[in-house]
Length: 258
Image 1 (tube, rainbow, N blue to C red):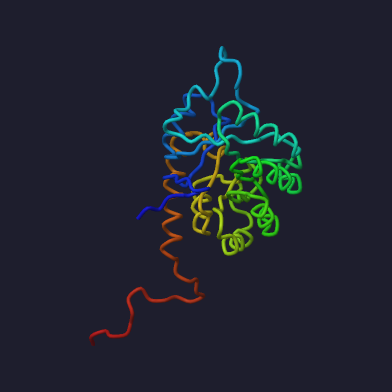
Image 2: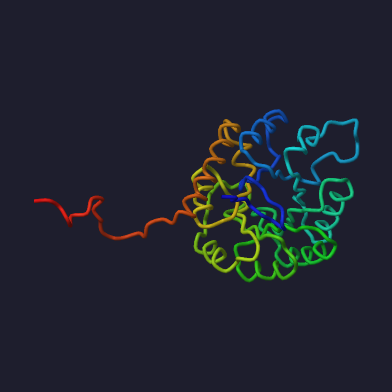
């Protein structure tokens, strides 16, 4: 069965998307990304060296024949800032795809959804494939899709918090009501069980950075996240048994020979 993650007509073998920030070295980053099995990797446009070829850049360590680069607009606090960052990434040859972030609060790093909608509409009209980092609000998600978003990427918890999925009810609602574009959980994952829960809720994919990069053993955690995403997706497809208040015997009592 061809069970790819498909975004804007492009297929990806892995449903795990990983970031490139916070690693202790570029070498560790490379090993962790390879261990994760991811074939899409996010790169912060504002935090990489795109122009001075004499200086080291993380782009020097990413094999573009193996990984699809997804520029992101991390660190942008207005629609104009995010639009400029996306355009810069495209002009420098990164991609015409963008993980769109427009932050509204410095402490929580929650998205500014009004500015996010504005930037999504502008960039989609300019031919970008826009993947917006957003809240877990159904109405905002629907408006992003109407504005041209190619996926909806609600947070599971605040960026880098490691708290895991905090509002499973909203994510279940999003899963039931958002069917025309992929639903990718972005932010808040802390360990493998969090990734499995996100996928069991029906997410099409999970995006993470801190949970891997800041683990005591980043490479081993990347392996764990890979397995968790795969297991959670298979469990969702398989269909879990319903929860019951009382026990049900594993071996039925009817039909026993006496």
